[in-house]
Length: 339
Ligand code: TXA
Ligand code: MG
Image (tube, rainbow, N blue to C red; front, side):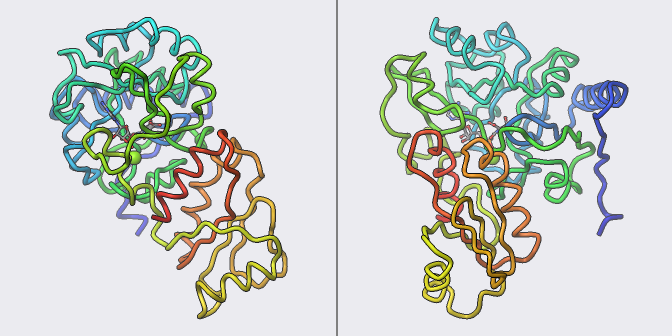
């Protein structure tokens, strides 16, 4: 299998390697091809956002439906302003508070942005990421990068270079390894084109933090059944191959009783991901422990789900997480993965 992998993987852990990777990635992007790059949320599959044929390659490689718009990544606010036709004062305040970082702002698009990026829509999502590699790369290119998560459509997002290699290694020329993604789940997407801004996709910049800057926020996420508004909100997104269930238990005996009901065959092939009530008897094939802390949980959850898939798990049981605002995006992703 290994000799079939065609993507080169470049490391970035010394200044010289980092610089080489920037130059090689910029060369490929200028030539209209794709590069998988690290960001602080998840790895992205990048193309020159101003080159329609490069961007359309993203859709082909991912198997992504053409009606799902891409996020445009910029290296500074000036570049963001060139991508949009209006930049409200509120965008300035949000950028000052949360950029660089995991927040995507949806605004009216400028004529500079090709149709293929916005799926023909009148708005564009822009984000200034904080990972130093992608920021340096965008500066070196001088153009913004359209980048969805670097996985085939409907698969789990990748949070390290190995995840990307497994999903897209045969389809793209270069993967840049920038280490484990520090946030671990996709950015918060905030629609600023409405009278009252609305979160289209929850992320680790949660609504309470946004309210402090925005003042008023439309309550509740957009209707997930409204695909034209934000197709990424469709259910069955972000799913591992194994079946996933989110459950609550207060003792190992209760977990065992629960499993007997939902998975009566045997505990083989069952992976548990726990943060508080950790089963310790050794009766389960796989038990992963993630700290009971939303930032740490978000950072680790996709890697754990990838690991369960790699281990051939048939059922993944994730311990339910709190209902409080800092956990909201995690609950959202778990609900989608189990949907
Ligand atoms: O953290 C992230 O956002 C990562 C990294 C690579 O930056 N990117 C990412 O891209 O998650 P993707 O394509 O997997 O998800 C983008 C989401 C989708 O739900 C899409 O529908 C929504 O953003 N989106 C993009 N442009 C939009 C627009 N103009 N209006 C509404 N939703 C938009
Ligand atoms: Mg995605």
